[in-house]
Image 1 (cartoon, one colour):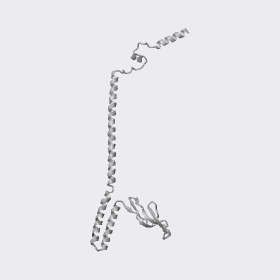
Image 2 (cartoon, one colour; image 1 turned 135 degrees about the vertical axis):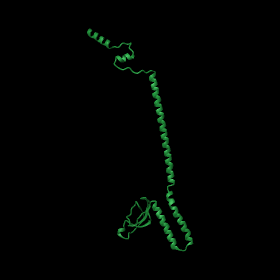
Image 3 (tube, one colour; image 1 turned 90 degrees about the vertical axis):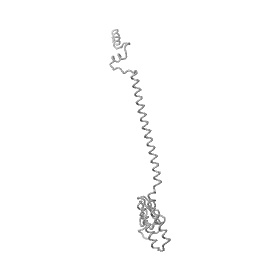
Image 4 (cartoon, one colour; image 1 turned 30 degrees about the horizontal axis):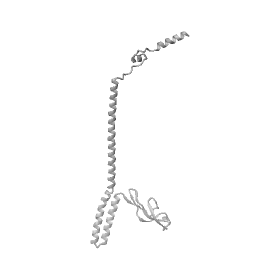
Length: 196
């Protein structure tokens, strides 16, 4: 047993390191590389890195604030343009109708001074055609309802009458008020009488 204790003491003495080694010597004995010192050079690097990160942060914050301001300006400008567009949406239609109004004024002046009823009728008919062409040019189309099957999406039934023939049952017999489309969208439903 004594031999074993002696061997254990020798092995522990071989593996123990002396207490008077420097840190660089201890790292070298253990097979490693010495670490960089944490002296003044390390502190300067830390300060330089902190300054770089701080300036980068300030630059990104400035970019963010500018982008936010640009977006706010864009939002305000588009809201203003939308309000202006809504306010002047009818301008094109009204400009197109002004010549028709002028024609009506001339017709009303000539009604007082003329005795020829046929000429007055012809003038009113010409003005009506001009008005209708102007509205068609802006996308307005009349709806054809008479003789068509009743469609609740297009027609508003005012009343039902007995159909004059069996083929007119469930169809529009008469049209009280015309319906109109504006670019294929119904803007006024036709008021109709449906055969029953």
